[in-house]
Image 1 (cartoon, rainbow, N blue to C red):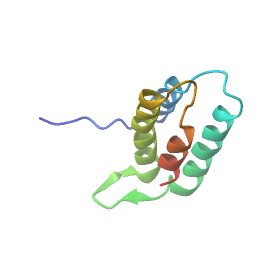
Image 2 (image 1 turned 45 degrees about the horizontal axis):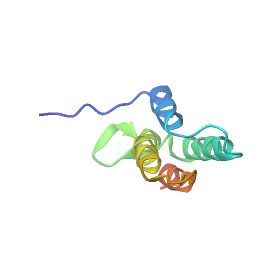
Image 3 (image 1 turned 30 degrees about the vertical axis):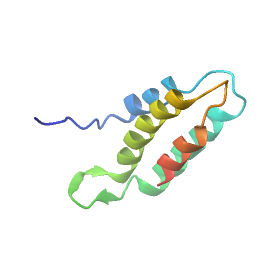
Image 4 (image 1 turned 120 degrees about the vertical axis):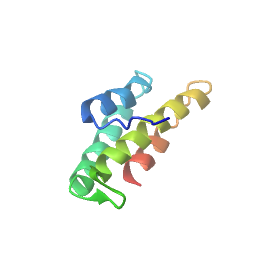
Amino acid sequence: MTVEIIKDEKLLISTIFSFVPLGIPGVEMRITEAINLSKKHLKDRFRKYDIEDNKYLHSLRIAAKTAEYAKSISTSGFFRFDLIIIALLH
């Protein structure tokens, strides 16, 4: 059984934002800034065992999974967007 690795930047970014609740001031802006920083510093760096997959797309995939997790643990309006930012910058 093989797992297909998503390498579509726009799809990954839309997946991240699909889990972010609307109406929390500054959250979307901070996540967008983290995405831009990640892209700036990681887009030309490649993973050791997969030279076709850069570290930027890897960080987006991890952030998408983290956003799903952050939504699942959010309670009483408290959303852990900091986990998404950490995933993007790891």
